[in-house]
Image (cartoon, rainbow, N blue to C red; front, side):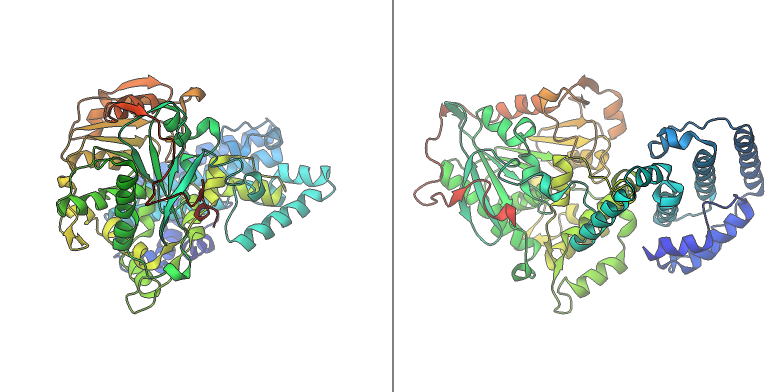
Length: 566
């Protein structure tokens, strides 16, 4: 990022921290940053002198302690996992890491003292300093990373050759791979739950899954996964496949497998995805199953699309769904978490003019750009640790199905992406009830079906309190459950793994913090809680379907289909 590079030209994490100098460095940098060009920054750096002096004194004390430790040759020990090997305990490399951590801590403390009265500007300032700090870690550079140096010596330089090959491959693909491309193959060791594609158009393939029980619940479940990644996050390997678990519990399951858009779809809109995507999938599922009021499930942006589609259908006079489930899903974009630092009018206007069709120009928003953007939001966990291990040490990343899926990104049509970006992240007016899709107001209050909402405690993509905010928008009975971990790992948590925990509270409160204070904590997976809930809305059990599809919608190919492989 240009703004990050500009800050690095003014401040180095390797120089001693001096509050007065650091203040001036931040001031000069802010005047050059495109993110702050519309801001009045004149008062940002007027920090109380007493606080500055105290900060400087605290730094001097810790710096002296660090010097004494170095002079006395005491070993260094770090809780930071970037420096947790024994090689970092030595005086030379340990002092480099310790000095980096010390300067970083005090620079971030200084940023917190700045007199920035605009919330977004303050978030951006903190974000950019954090990005610079993360990028400046001595572990990111070959000559200051003892583990990389040791590996190069042990392999006679072989690790450096491997690292260059890893870098070249990532540059060719345009993404930082967190799992090797050859570790998995969709349809072979991922997305292997048996089923058939029973319908397709230019937007999606509809998969109907084969039963694994003699009887099935009468009311089918139609799943709308995210349109940003491939559907198989819900059908990874057999042991952690949500889809496999569903059919084994006797549910009739239909699922949308979105097509990865190419240039032929570059002009498609949000409304197209509602009508020719979700609404068409509902029509076909109704026709094949013979059931009108379906159990509907949406994950992430899939849930946003689903909720909009249901609002449009109900506005047309259609009936309510039998039930609605939303996993880590936004309907209210008041708090979008760290991604908010990127979004402003300038960004959205640029996208609209280049790929959104505002001046007749349409294009695709590349999936790789979305993947890299989300990864850099957690730089130490999803970015720099991989560059260090892959490029400096020449190591192969671990084999992990979720990270493989994360790298298997998909494009978005420019008009669809820009409409979504403007009316959600920028303006947050999707919930207003005033926007129209297909001529019908998008009004979430018309959805009165029983609803299950799930949020993840450490989700940096859909903060759990934003998932909770949906409780104020829908009109039917709602159950909210909070799970541990993040956006994806929190959702994909099968009971057999006996991992993590979750919270429940049958009483919804206006404030999510109040809900959590009185919530009951449970060990293990939240899946059984949802299955107990959905079983109550699944109808009676009947003989399992013997033939998938119908005369009107015969089988096209075996699951997982061809769209997911493109």
